[in-house]
Structures are given as C-alpha cells and as structure tokens.
Amino acid sequence: MALPHSHFLPHVVAPGEVIGNIQADIAAHFGINPDCKIHAGTTDSIAAFNATGVDELGVGVTSLGTTLVLKQLCEHRIEAPEYGIYSHRYGNKWLVGGASNAGAGVLRNYFSDAQLASLSAQINPLQDSPLDYYPLSKIGERFPINNAHLLPRLTPRPSDDVEFLHGLLQGLARIEAAGYAKLAELGVPTIQHVVTNGGGAKNLVWQQMRSRLIGVQIDASAYSEAAYGAALLALTSA
Image (cartoon, rainbow, N blue to C red; front, side, top):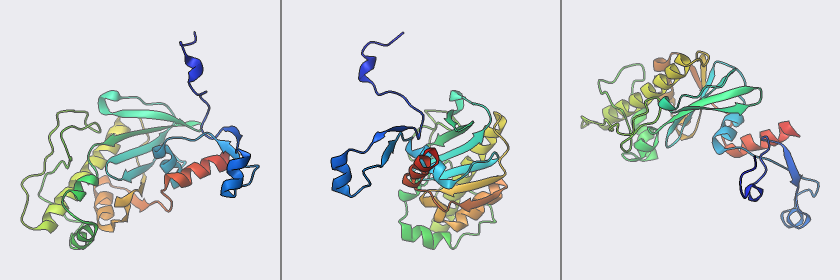
C-alpha cells in the first residue's frame, strides 16, 4: 500500500547505482566530462569504511574521531538496540557496528594537538595505568553499554598530565576492546585484526596500547576519507 504523498519522496536505490547523467551546464562550468554519470551514494561512515578496502571477515575498522565507532563485516544481520548495535547491507555481507559517545573528542577538552603528541611520547604503552576512567564528554552512553544516564568517570585526576592522558587513552582503549567483545558475543566473527581511521589513528603510542588490550595487530588505514570511499563505490559500480 502506497503511503500518502509518497510521490514526494526520492526513489530508493542501491548504493552505487547509476541514477542519471551530469547536466551539460554544470559539466561545462566545472570542466567535467559531459558523459559523467551520477551514482547513488551512501552514508559518510560507510563510505569511510569502504575507503579502508576491508572486505574480509574478522577485520574490524575503528574510527577514532570525536566519537569511537566500530564496524565489522558479518555473514548475517545483527540488530541489538539494547546494546546500540545495528547492521547495514554491504555487498553480499552485513556491516555490523556501534558507536560510543566516548572518543577522541574528550581529549580536546584538556589538550591541544601539540600537547597530545608531546605527552603521548612519554607514556609507556605496555604498562597499565592505575586509573579506571570511562571518558565520556557528557552524561549518557550508547555502545557497548546502552545507558542514557551513565556518568563520565574522569576522576581522580593526577597532577601529572602524562599520567592523566595515559588514563584517558587506556579508558578509551578498554571501551574499544569491550565493543569488539560484545560484537563477538552476538555472533560477529572474532576479531583478528583492526584497521584504524580518524584523527586518533596517528597516535602510535595509543595504537600500541590498544593492540595490547584488544590482543590483535592494529594498523592505520592508508585511506580514510569518506570522499575516497564514495569514489571507490562509484568505480566498482560502473
């Protein structure tokens, strides 16, 4: 049964599907080939996943941006809203993931890029911090714990900024590890390797810390821009 006014809504097509050709005046204005075809796109987070080139089971993609986002391929769909976990169709597989409200954004509340680089260089990533932080920027978490009332845990704060940053990075790494453990518990293939994108991927000390706590090799993605992933989508759909 058609919904009232459904004719006002755009027609839904598969990502990458050709939906038309570029208009001649626009092609001329921007110097684009007039034969250029226009493909349907996807969300920025899925385009960023596509940019990594990951296409196998057991490989997770962690986006270390303002928030912490985990994505992993699975043969079947998994929906667990009670844990903030959802799936998108991705080729002949499903892309399962969740997004924590914690992330690198909390680091910006305390440190500049220069300070993060300088302080991180003084941290031993093979040593545990005694601090037990859950680094939220505000009240509420959605994954791997779905609790709208969860309070940030950022105390006690040591006087030494190196120790404080160590605790923050470790807290975020533990959330990431708990996220992959929750995905595995719900039927996603056990993680064997993690690829990272986002600004936090540049921090090699944090990468070593995360690798130790998750127990797998972690590498930074060679390509992480969503625009690159969108271009790949069009290329593979041509």
